[in-house]
Length: 184
Image (tube, rainbow, N blue to C red):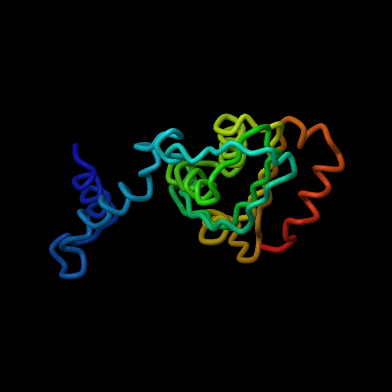
């Protein structure tokens, strides 16, 4: 069964008329949108980093903040969205700055939970660069909490992942957290 047919079945199941002018092309549009929103499954870490790892003597923290993202909650298929802040401690290599956004996008464009997304990004940074450590903070709003269920419009969720020296070195951890904005 095609995704387009599945959307047709869903619309029919909720009592809609697929011949109604506003819905005539909705199944195909919805299928295309879902394919785009889950396009991260078709990408690999090697593909998105595209050889943008460069030798460097820098051993100080590199921090990229406020990378916006959109993802779909794997529990309800509703969006969650927010900002990602990524830091790492280089060990001979640095990563091209745009690749932080591409790595975030690759994992965010899969059905997700925020906790796993945070960890996946941190692990990918270490894997690609060989960094001594990495840290990721994600602040986001979840439509499953806002549109349904408890209906809390102003709630946000923060998740954190520290790996390697970023986990073990309290000073590096503090430096990172002090540089990351508190508010979504």
